[in-house]
Every structure is written in structure tokens, then in C-alpha cells.
Length: 185
Picture 1 (cartoon, rainbow, N blue to C red):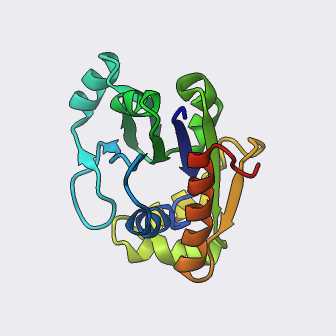
Picture 2: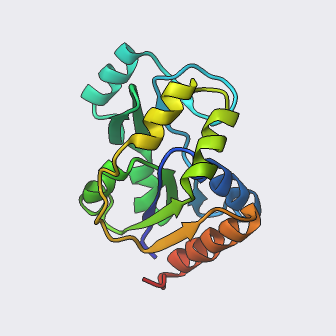
């Protein structure tokens, strides 16, 4: 079985990290990889990431150390190129990425799938403010960001406005189907 990359996308505050965490806790990590993103943001509450400076990020990017990289919300984000080896070895790699990377997935990873997590705007705003990383103006800027890939087809859309277990179970089932080579498209 060849590996695959599963891109988890959605606007800020949709609950991507929460759904990923719930799923990771319930999924055997054998042959599934949930890589930490590299971000030009200091460590703090919320997302577990590898914090780097702008200069270190730029050097890593120039050296080809990222399979994917992008910029959003004044930050730089990257997914380590090491995931390419994991995919070649048959692993299913599940990554939280920007919607703007979607057109590059197939070219970068070969076998790739897209999962979009959506939520009503009023829930998003409350979640963004509750995490304590953004001011009210920054939260509004995140809410106002235009979807960079509005028409890109997704393999699964999860509406994460109810119980986390409901959204997580949908992702869990989808990832298991990717592992067996028969995801529902």
C-alpha cells in the first residue's frame, strides 16, 4: 500500500486542531503520522508546533526542508519534507495546512486527499477569542479572510458546530478508509 497525504483545511477557529487531537488519541499511530508544523510564532497555549524565527524559517525553506510552506496571518508555516519519506514508506500523513496549498497537494505528494472543516462564523469568532492569541481586531481579520481556494473539491467536509466526538468520528472513519485504499470520494 502506498502512503498518502490528507490535508486538513478550514478557516481559523473551525476546530481543526481539536478534531485532529481527538482523532489522533483514538487512532492507532501505527502507519499514521500527524506532523507538527513549523511556525514563526513563539510557543504558547494552543497548537503544538515547532517555533522558529523568520530568518530560520527562510533558511529552511531555501534549503528545501519543507514539503509545503505558506504564509498567512503574518506568519510563515511549514510541513517538514520528512513526511515525503513517510508517505513513500506507506504511511498516511495527516496535516493541518492552508487552503492555499490545496492545488499543490497532488504534485507534491502523489496520493492526496482534502478534508475541509467548517463551522458557523459566530462559533469561529468565539473560539478565536477564547484561545487568547489574537486581539479582537486580529480575530476579525481572521474572520474576514477570503477563502484562497473556494472552489477546490474536497473529499470530505466536516461541519464542526456540535460535539467534537461527532466531527472526530467522521475524520477517524475517513482516515481508516484512506489507509485501506478505499476512501469515499
